Length: 168
Image (tube, rainbow, N blue to C red; front, side, top):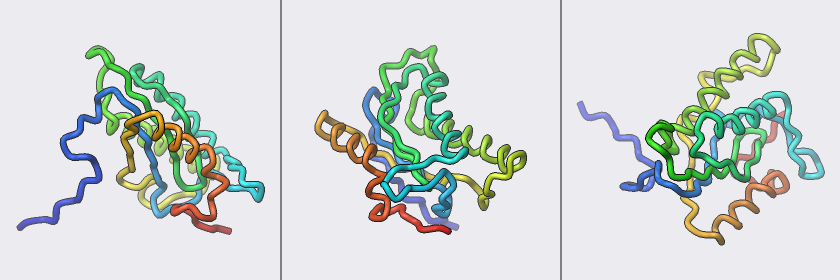
């Protein structure tokens, strides 16, 4: 029996452990708004869960010493960030973008589950994050500037964002 092949969203033949800048987007499963809200003035107001997401973002640099963390934003139901992978030494361990994002998703999900049990955070169904994540290879300074601006101004464009979801 031939099962359908899952379509890859990665660039075929590209080595995602090589040095470079990567723009990542990770969305909550079912696009639940779990990390805060956008205020009327266009400012993202993180709740405790949003603070936890940001905490684990900064922990990436400790877990993966070959990584530099650049612009990022926690949104109500997704996360944007720019990861720079620098030349890694063999002794520093796995440095692929998939392993970096996988570790981040695992740590945030595990802590979120603990907080649901101990502090009554809003529960989620099945998993915290969507199965996959989106990435874009940043190839030049101009692209980096455009993506940085997109990340930093994302809250002001929330109502027009493709991940926008109104919840009350």
